[in-house]
Length: 92
Image (cartoon, rainbow, N blue to C red; front, side):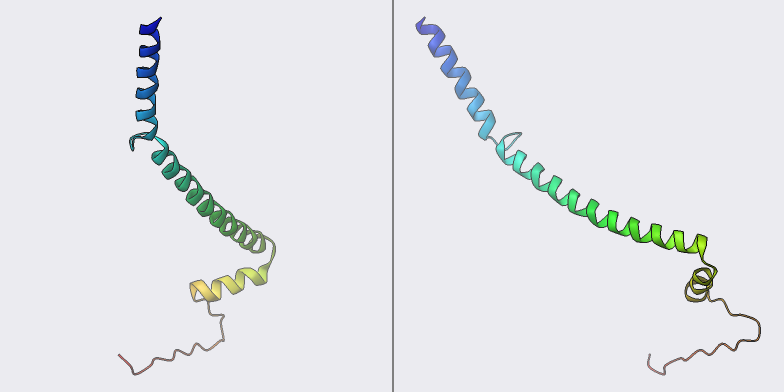
């Protein structure tokens, strides 16, 4: 019976060393929890961005004025008969 108690104490001590060691112990658990928190924050930001992009796509599918505005701002569209002015600064 005495040997069993010693054996169980040694097993318990070994498990405690593993628990408190930096390799796979509580420290790594805290590090992984922080990584999960950071990833969730990044996911929330991406969800907001995706919602904005979805709204843009929906507007472009259903609204000709939105298409024209996008083409003017991002693609440089100019209608026939319009005059395009470009202002260049002298600073280099």
